[in-house]
Structure formats: C-alpha cells, structure tokens
Length: 427
View (tube, rainbow, N blue to C red):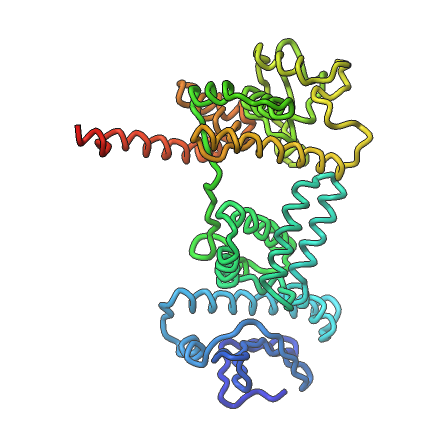
C-alpha cells in the first residue's frame, strides 16, 4: 500500500537499513465512524509492511502531530500507547537485526501475539487448567464470564489487545441491561482482570494496553447479598418452627458454619474427623491451597452446639479418614464433588431465604453465616487481628475492608434512631 500524502508521521527511526515510522492512514474510516487507523510502518529494501495500532480521528491526529502540549487525558493516553509500542518495535527490530539479520517473518512472529491472541481462547485455556487442578467452582466462574463475553461480542472474537477501558464500560452497561447484579458484574470483571494480568506478565500486551486501574476502568465491588445478623436475630432464627427433617438439617448446617468461624460450604463439607483435634477444628481454606502465599491454618473451638449438630447429622463411623458430614466420598471426581456441594448449598440457601423472609430479615444465605460471625465478634469487642486470623485472611486490610460495609450498615441503622417515627410524632 502507498502512504496517503496527507498522512503525517508522528515518529520516525532508522537503523541498519530498516526504517520505522508511525502514520495515520486516512484512506478508509472504520465502519460508521470518523476514525482512521494509526499504523506502524516498517520499511526494508523498498518493501513496506504496516502494523495497525489504534483508531483516531483526523482532528486527534492533528493535535498529536502539532508539537504542542497535549492536555486531553484520552489523547495523552493514546500518545503514551503509541510511544510505548513504537519503542517496543524498535527494540524488536534491533534485537532481530543483531541476532539473526532482519526479516519481516521474524518481526511478524514477535509482533503477532497481542493482536492475534483470542480473549475467549485465553478463557478456555484457563478453564481447562483449573478443571485439571480440581478447581471446578473457579472454572465455572470463568465459563460464565466467557459465555457472557461471547453474548456481548456477538459474532466477533475479541483479542486481548482489544480490551480497553471503553470496551469494559460498554460490557458493564450490557451486563446491567441484562439485569446482572453488581456482585456478578464485579466477579466477571475480576475474571477478565486475571486473564489480562497474565497476558501482561507474558508480554502478550503492553502496559499501556492494560485497561484496569486508576484513571482507567476500576471494578465496582458489589455489595448485594451482604447481610449480617445480630445475636438476637440468630436466636430467633434458631427458634423458627420448621416441620421437615431436611429443613432442620439445612438450618443446622448453616448454624454450624456460623459457629465454625464462618467456614464456607466448600470447606465445611470436606471436613474429616481427623480435623477434630483436642476440642478444636483445624483446617486450611481450600481457596488458598494452590496459591503461593503461606498457608494459614484456621482454628475454631468446638462448642457444645457444634457437637450436637455433629452427633445429629454427622457420619456414624467416626474414623479419622471419614468426612464429618457424609455428603462426599473419596471415590468422587472433582466435578462430582462440586455438583454435590453446589446442590446442598442451594438447598441451604433456599431454606434460609424462607426463614429470613418470614422473620423480616431479608435474604439470608450461607454468606450471611460468615458475615455474621465476623461482625458479631467485632461488635463484641474482639480485635481486628483476632477476627482476621479466625477468618483466614492474609492481611488486616482484607479484614478491615470486609467489615467496612457492615459498619456502614450499622451506622445507618443507628442514625434512624435520631428521627421520630410517624406514629411517635403523633403521640
């Protein structure tokens, strides 16, 4: 292709007979826009090859090449990206020329990663790896995110280098339009961020292409479903009449989770009698087993109420290698274990939701047990350090952030006590 006469070079560099420049190709705009591609042009022995970078309007390009101070944030970001990519290509050309002699084939191999790597392929690879490692729940999380991206992208297959703050904003609006909760959106965005973190680490994308962070796209952490009960509310919850045997079992398992340091269901149903040591339950969070962080053992005191639940619903054969609650067995595959745990957790949530609704407490779930454990300890005067250790958090900041929502919730309730209710005002 021949360079358009109106195109002005932003930067140009030559070494060992190879020339690199940046041009704005204004011959054909992007469909239904006034945007034209910015391209890196490499010239060697009278042959030119163009590598696309981003799209800019003619006005934006004129401002970049005018030689004046750039004030617009978006234009500054575009300029930084172009300069960073220009310098990267320079280093690649120099390295190839020095090591093996310049060829376009070698350049194509080195430059193709970021523009040709499929986002959905990256998700599929992550799902495969997680499944092989038995992390079925996390694999499902990535599957749901991938499916959602496929729906959003329609027939297109996004590339890792396509994911910009603007793309993420549009994706978030798509999720909101489809009635996804703030919590679900935050989970999907964290999965995307993990994929792009890996791409950045492997240099598939460069720093200026990374879309997350300050002044870029910031994940809005969801607060939906966070409910912390008081001791009085838990007492009322335990007194609520349930006629069915299964309903009583689900409530008891929820209560056991609350008493056992807010243990999540994934860890609760994997407890074995060997985890019972000298009046305590000792276990490692499955969530952190495969991380590089130092493993923190969680220790919960076995209260009489916990012993009652174990005696009522636990495995009658109390060999050390047996599960306390006989829902899993050692012949199950990770997928089968995940299915059983998901099904019983769903049943617990359904039962607790009914009780919460009947008592006017809102939607109670297995998460409520963990949230209640933490906040009741905090309000009873326990230190943040002790709560953090009990929950198995890696640092105090995590615990403080975890409790922040509930402290805000409590302040809001306390504030209501400063205002007379309508019926009180009448009196």
